[in-house]
Length: 161
Image (cartoon, rainbow, N blue to C red; front, top):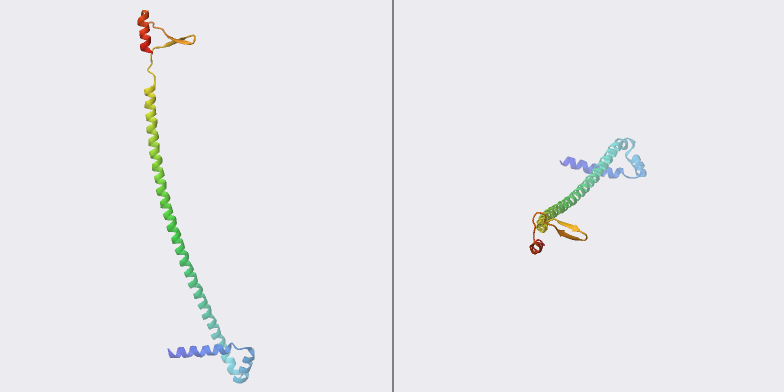
């Protein structure tokens, strides 16, 4: 484990050193010699690439965490809206059921009133009486089956109406 940590520290130090400008690279070539620098340069470049991958991975991880948090917030908002919509739907459903019950009860009341009106209409129907005949502008009742004297006929007219 110590070897790995030591290797990582060494590679980090090497990477920091490899990021120097071209002028420093020329100085290293002259100091270390052409052979040593060329042998270490691919390893340094590889270490630099690995470090970039690590930072890219860290950025991706951060981005994924932000996306997960955004997703959780959106899901919470959607759940809240879903609950609100379900509550409103239940309220509208109960209101529509109440209105339907009111309509049914009003329909029954109307039917009862119509039935009552029909009964009242039947009660008000005139009882068919004797057939009157119009002579001029007036109506007269002429009895054809019985012969009555004047006084009995007048009395019968009062009774008939």
